[in-house]
Image (tube, rainbow, N blue to C red; front, side):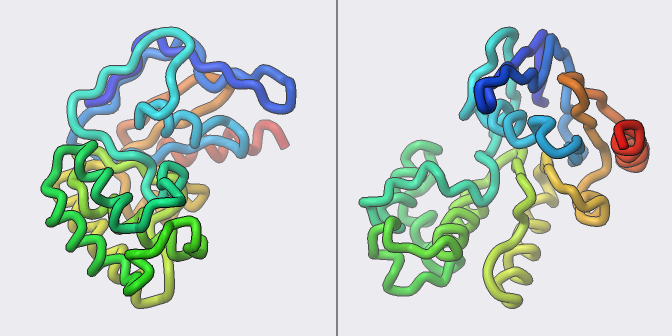
Length: 220
């Protein structure tokens, strides 16, 4: 269970204050994956960071009962001067998982070869994404957070990534941001719509998609 209680978050964008969420109280229940919808710039990625714990609320609090991932594919926390393996070892210690098991898993999954021992700052964006996705799949969570990314790399790697991700979701849930209703339908059963600082939870994903599309039409 993830619960927001009287939660408010404001950000400044180009000198303008924007409300992401305002005095929101909501529970995301365990056992159903949820699609997060909202117009461009509504603050969906910011909300994922709040859920992940990488961004603090201005007011209120968030309660997490369960292990929550960082946003899948997120590369920003890697230390560029450390090798891929050294970064994986650091993550293992932070999350309390077996270090060698995680290193072995990521080395095989990410398919980086000798670059696994090279500094991450020398990686291409695709290599960083492979490393990040491999680490994400190597640590088991109750909730996986996904921001438009479910697979990276060539066709074979994408197929492998999607297969492993779906295996993880057999006993975990996902909170997923995507502009593609078909992608949300593949992974989610319920939905949340973010609009003007308010969150509305729908137990049926189709109702959430319809509400979001109605919001878009209302401002055309």
